[in-house]
Amino acid sequence: MKGKTIKCLVWDLDNTLWNGTLLESEEVTLKDRVVEVIRELDEKGIVHSIASKNSYEDAMTRLKHFGIDQYFLYPEIHWNAKSASINNIRKQLNIGIDAIAFIDDQPFEREEVNSVFPEVYCLDAAEYGQLAHYDCFNPPQVTEDARRRRKMYQEEIQRKEEEENFQGPSDSFLAGLNMELYITSATVHDLARAEELTLRTNQLNATGKTYSYAELEQILTSPDHLLWVCEFKDKFGSYGKIGLVLLHISAHNWHLEMMLYSCRVMSRGIGTVMLNYILEQARSRGKTMTAGFRDTGRNRMMYMAFKMGGFTETGQQRGDCSLLSHSLENIRQNPTYIKILTQY
Amino acid sequence: MEVKDKIRAFIVKNMSVWEDDIVLADTDNIFEKGFVNSLFAMQLLNFAEQEFNITIENSEIDIANFSSVSNMEQLVTRKLLLLHAR
Image 1: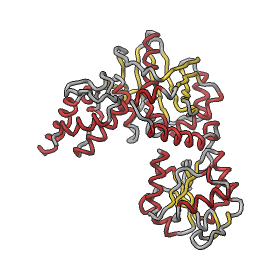
Image 2 (image 1 turned 180 degrees about the vertical axis):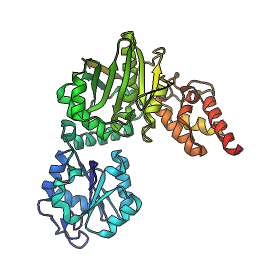
Image 3 (image 1 turned 120 degrees about the vertical axis):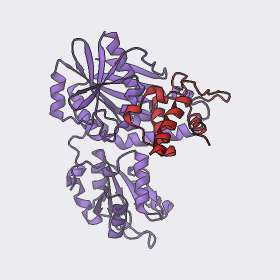
Image 4 (image 1 turned 90 degrees about the vertical axis):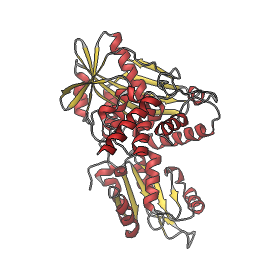
């Protein structure tokens, strides 16, 4: 059993989700209480998908007939290798391969997947009834954002469709999205989600450090720290709380101890918007600005964001992080199509 | 294609402007002109590393190196020369 939390469970269909083989007979029946298992994981923020060797039309018709088609995101139903299916699902969901579990009754399929992706957690179909008890399917906290996760993915699918069908300049498409970024002081109600964000975000965490609920609670009462949470919305709905900023405040300086944001908002340039906002606030308070960065091998994107945002290396260390500083001259203007609302 | 042409083609393909008649000069600052955002800098870095089979160090990640077709070309050419000198 792995210590990491699974974000997506990929299901085989024949003799895994249902009893029987669809190609041989349409009279397949759902496994006993399997829908309960699916719902339970769904409510914890673990999304489901499918890797099945079947006809797409026939399998989807069956799932609709059972009334459970809406639970499965980006189903891969065709005759290609399941390792390829899982890779497609991973790309669509934009998650790490080690955050995927795969359940199938056939040892051959599990071994094929593991031969390409040893990180995928493979499960025998016989285990389905126990899944809800496994540690990796039990995130430490179930937040509001987790409960809405599948819905948010589905809103994202709608967004992509509209974006692909949009004819004209991408700037006017962006302007039509009514994007709003809410930056607020964290309250005790945000801490569970804040902890979850530090655990789930690997590529866009400047220091790679994760924070426990207790640590965050302490930071909240510290007079030397500011902890902000960012929520992002557009006309399709809310992305939820997607960003976190932790500043260490001293008499003359603001030090960005942690900044992270969810991969889901990366393509909207939210990282740059957050960073520019912090810089503007430091300048208006007459502070100098520094930031910490620790190379985790996965977060080069954050280094890029800092350097493109105008930070430079000081050559010094702060803790286990290299120390960057910003002159606060020439802060780039944020795009006008994202409205920033603040409350703290 | 020359290094410069490949870099230019990649930038033009990913520009977020929709005008047909935009002219991108080799020395135009692509960030200041608003042609691209900083997320694009990351894509440009990945493109350069894969296309030219080089590794760009963190110390070379600098806005100046990524800000125009010419500067990016210079960085890539320098890395390629170092590679061949070995």
